[in-house]
Length: 617
Image (tube, rainbow, N blue to C red; front, side):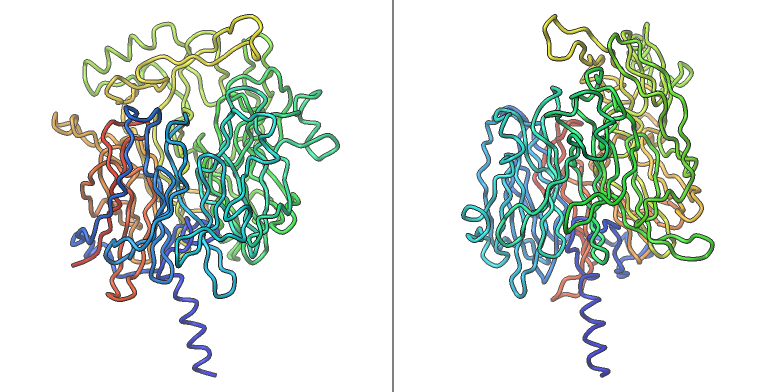
């Protein structure tokens, strides 16, 4: 009996020593029970190995830039990495030696937003281990984890075409997978990235497929059809063939209860909704589905009738918190807007009160503006939600002069000010706040760690030519793009420009806030750390550390999770717009921390193809 219990304990401990899911576990806590690396010895971390993918695109050879946003999976002594061009590579996690590589051969000359793939998903069928790999062109492959070859029994010789049934009417429009799919038992659950530049387009419906055969098992209509719950939030026939409202980010699964949680995004188009009056369910909603049937269990809409592109960008975190001294299983959803929503995982009941408050109407002819929007009373917003002239930057005279000219004639709005016919400064921007990097959660202290950026945008609505599908489009100011920053990408408001925030989910109060990131040019001038834009996420360990790249300064950092003090920082070949992973090497018994440092993206012109692993000497 003792031997049996010991084997059970060892079996339970093994996943904790590795990183078998994108978020560490199926619920995305991004927590590791490893304790080998601590605040006392983290300064001794050294590069253990580097793997180069060979995949960089700066937009000169191919029409699309690359970003290396993958979080590797580590299980049974093997690491699985996806590359910007969509390859799946198996590595020895202690040396970085390549074991095999699978190339889905996407068309590199086809226009897309970015060359991007955030990771794969593992599924086990008895003794057989498989990986699911989604691609930018909308295919879902099943790969044998031992050989690296497609499993012929799945779909048509190893893959299914996810465009079938959802993009048939729009063959020229974008439809693909940029984030790892979710797996529950023998069901693989897929979100999607869809075209949203016009009102009608490929459907963003979430679907469940048989993991063995690829057969469609269920389909959840993210825009409800006639007769379905929520269809009355779309006036007239505005729901028909509506694009957007998709789940382009990462799904979470409660494996015990069989519930999958969807972070859904803005209905198309992003900035004009006059052709879709109503609250527009299930746009920008956290939706809980029965993972076996696809039936809706509950939902909460974080933005009614979104006209700001404030998508739900991040994986919901499945956590446990205390209420009146008793544990409650909960789900937490962070947002671009800086709000943190916390719900009972089963019932959907908010664990902190949420108020519906009146918001301004749009001045754009034909636009519909929902009269109210939800405001959670706790926790406080973790990002800036407004701007005034007194907030204008003073970091350099050149930056202030540029930004002063940029805001001439502008309206200064707050979170839900509709974009008007004049220049409008709004916080946060389409990148948040928080983004797809999401949050990490420490179950020991019930603390949520969120990285955020303080970058607004300056935009206006501009009339389109007569006969256009929609009468107005969003026009941005400034260079580059519509972000509220100067030509060196330094934001136009006073710093800090990036934060790491610790939130006690039992009380809803901040434990601490730390400035996240530096601008080297400003440091050289004697200006204190300002924080930077950041894309990517954090992980937290029982060893007392938070590891995070994300920042646009080519750094990888560790913070003391109790105090928020930065206790280790190292330079990378390029900025790490990704989320790290940590694991124990099976042979060396060493704890490793690994991060993808690809740079590029939309924030800088420094590129790399490096996956870098660190360990203690």
